[in-house]
Amino acid sequence: MIDVVVIPAAPTSPARVERLPAWDLAGFQRLVGGYTDAIPVGDELCLLARRGAALRGFPVNQRAGLLALYADPAFDGVDLRGDIVAAGPPDGDDLTPAPAWLRDLYDPAARFHVVDLTPGPEDDTEPLPFPFTDPFLGLAALAGMTRAFPESQFRLTRITNPEDRP
Image (cartoon, rainbow, N blue to C red; front, side, top):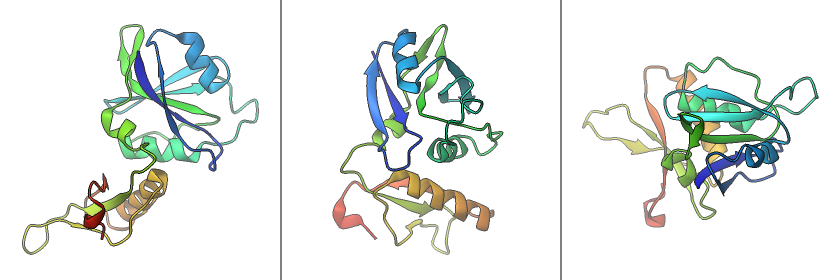
């Protein structure tokens, strides 16, 4: 059994972790609504999308697009449509679990902040002063700040202690 993250195309539907056998093609097809295409993203992520989703008029999955850009800034911008399943890279014919950092994003009680990793005058890093309850909003903020400040480095980080919130 592996844990994957299902990212619905509807922005109001929460992403969730599902557990299914790594070889369960029918299970993956059920999650995306039909035949699947595997889209490798970086070294540690594989997205499964509904084959022919654009031709069938499925909506663009903006959250999956943000995730792909976060995992691989060089992602070529494949038009991700419909519900998307995020897993780890294939191992032979089977998929591997979604990376732990991705599964960790979907704890319902989780909160996140963006950390500026650019060393300051005292070589410290600081969380920016706005927490997010939705990791995709954090990814969107991260993408915007990375474009606006290309000389800086940012990371989305889970807040583990509520007293540490900025």
